[in-house]
Length: 372
Ligand code: AOF
Ligand code: ZN
Image: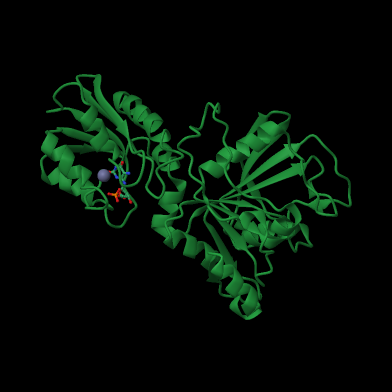
């Protein structure tokens, strides 16, 4: 077992290399081992290109006949953009497959393992299942729940304030935290913001990674879809976020919009979706996130103000709350972290602590809301 853990850890490290590029596919790594020695390794880089197993087989320095393949995800059994990996492993004469977790894609879902076993291959697993699942929180959630994995990122002062009363918020955190946010954006498939933030900050919501960033290869960074929640479609046409060249999607409510403005935006190439309205009269965020999942969006980063962040939390949509805490005090008139209609202690939202680390002069704390 120790041996399996060791090689699977190596496959996980390889899979992580695809963190910024595999969308909408999962990050997958593979090592091929013969007599305790790694003779091939690979990871999935980009949708449409070779899967991890195929890349590992192609890299082998000697015959893989009788070897063991360690794969972080069950080898696929279906013809997608590329042929089934299970077939490639069988054809190559692999004797044993050790897998990290079953593929939640209903097109695979155990079929890959079945295919391997039927061909006489010994199948062992799951090994390091939690660690392998953590590679793809978005892909896994989209496949099993039809929703993306949602991170809400907030920057606040030590006194829990996210902007001055006027809305001014640049900058609460330091440059190291802001670089960290760029990496979060780069690994997300979509960035969601609200019309309030667009009007006050006029953000472009693009990924700007420096070419000497050690963690992210700036040449392979793709721009996530920018999503704006704007009930009445009141966005100014000159907003930076609408500048052409990068994809933008607006959610609005059909009954609340001005037709002329809608036509003008459509004409300038902006994608607009009508969102249903929930019982409380607000845009139905769950439905909107479902629409994103249907478009292959695995991981969403919500970067917005107290209002919309509170709505995401109340709707049970937040998987991770990432708070950067700056060593500053903004005073009692400044805006709070989230607007939530809570009056009694018994109604407080409980959060589960996940991690904390310093980033420059700020602290980065990750919590998971405890939804009942
Ligand atoms: C694997 N190894 O490295 C990956 C897998 O359209 P395709 O052909 O790229 O197939 C995409 C699906 O294949 C994806 O939804 C997931 O189920 C699986 N991904 N499988 O054996 C890999 N990336
Ligand atoms: Zn495959």
